[in-house]
Length: 340
Image (cartoon, rainbow, N blue to C red; front, side, top):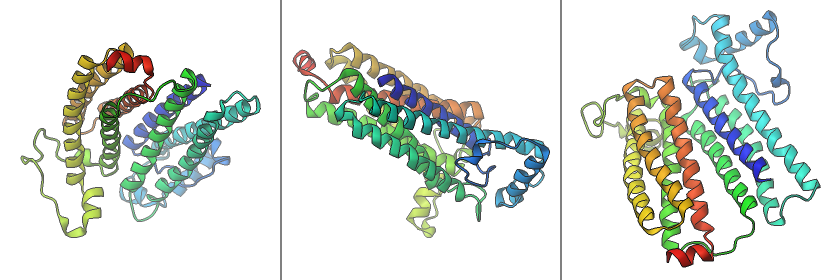
């Protein structure tokens, strides 16, 4: 069972990366209909390709951005979006079918049945959220709404986290302790929260193409904080303003970097659990690499290679934060006796 859930988590990592590539190549609106079943089969001849291309030509993105696109160029963006959706369907099958089989075989511990059922439900909801996101870009916009992109990515990460956590629960069995003292749990939960928030802010940056502006660092257009027009309201400022979105992403990154460094050093000195020390050390190294990748992504005007590596780094940090939080929350009596 733990293997099954680990595979699901790995598949979610893969679809997040494919989703990032789909976004960076401008491919996300190439399929303008939602056909959960029939959409599995791509166009198979010139007439079907022409039909799909005609549908794409009706939306604002084609008219305002890609008016000179050929059918061959359209095929490139189509395959990215089709692959992204196909992976989503495969994840749905990889979650639902084994769940039914394991449930029938009574191979799922009673305490984990509701968690696995919730995982199935979350994957189903994610498909709907994905179409809700795409639909926002089919009229009156040339791309998807940033807040919907953030919701879509956030739910994918929640599914990944839930799968990893439940896999650990299945692998290690019933809890034998009450976790580490509250201060430890709160400290690591803070790290987890900052890491997840940074991923959400990154989605807003991507959704607003905010990485394409203010490509200098450490300043932004020669200033610490760029000019922000508040006349359109706070929702616009904090969700749609390119400058403010990038400010939030940068400053939360600074907070995360300092907090993570301090926490890792503290854990390394105080904790005697080798597994926890290893995870903390890996997080400490990766968070600095991720910061450097963030700067490189800005300096290269969001080159696709740096953009994807930056997204992969964000996922890696969230995985490590999840594992660290699980170990602290599930600390047994032996851990407590050795460390406190």
